[in-house]
Amino acid sequence: MLIDHAIIHVRSGKGGEGHISFARFKYVPKGGPDGGNGGDGGNVFLFADPDVDTLLDFTGRHDWHGHDGGNGQAKQAAGRDGEDLRIPVPLGTLVYDQDTGETLADLDAPGKEILVAKGGRGGFGNEHYKTPTLQAPRVATPGEPAQERNLRLELKLIADVGIIGKPNAGKSTLLSRVSRATPKIAAYPFTTLSPILGITELVGARRMVLADIPGLIEGAHQGHGLGTQFLRHIERTRLLLHLLEVEPADGSDPIANYHIIRHELASYSPALAEKPELLLLTKMDLLDPAAARQAASRIAESLGKSLLPISAATGLGVPAALEACWKLLHQPQPA
Image 1 (spheres, rainbow, N blue to C red):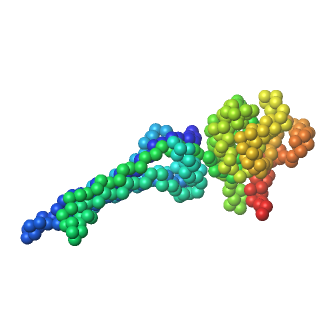
Image 2: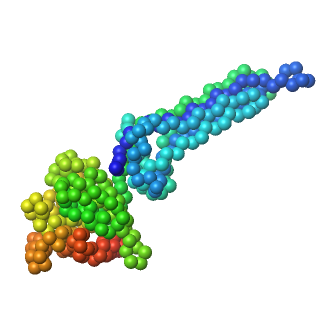
């Protein structure tokens, strides 16, 4: 199950306390100050880890704390620095300050990191305050306090191709056909309840990452159906692969279905609606060849767009569709 949002509390380590002590030597009746400094508290970092694909680890653990610095000791012994806490999150995680709403980071590249809570600096021991005129200071400072903050984490999947369309348009079947992903497939709406990633490999060691986005319905941008919780995942994709049933099982019109999805994209984000799009007409195996060709011609003419007929069940047209995706992804961008 994809968990794509979480709220957590992070706290760095506090600085260790400085120490007050005086050296005692056999032949030195009044030894000098030798209290050591406290160690620095540990920092808390978030970093993008390609091996993590969900925020599931944060659902059962709300608090993430760095390690405190050790206290200073006698004989000028400094306290040990607190160990940093490094928290792995999926690629594509957006980090917000939950209290202010400020965007702190977009961890969209492997290894990219952000310091979210800085450890407190260790306090000074009395040896630090020794001067020619103050040879026996009896003062030390406490370590700096820990830094705390509440964070909101939101995951937006990063994929080359976002597969979109109304429920039961054949998205999951296509993804399972072209990759090793195993989405649930059934003949009822909302079979896929969370985005699923799959990697398809083409001839010549070429690879594409595809994301099966749960079915959209009219009013999705207002929260209807699965709502906006998954629309944001499409924002990370470079190409939209829009699937239309040639003869929808619910009796709806494929042309109207196309416009419904396009309206939802534009209503959610105009920039999203401007992404390159490849239109596939699915489930062509359910009609006889003559009827399928006639339906494809009618739909293409009505929409004023070219489309590729496919059948994910039989493999008809699927290789050509993948090649078309690759070509669109790698076509020269306008200067």
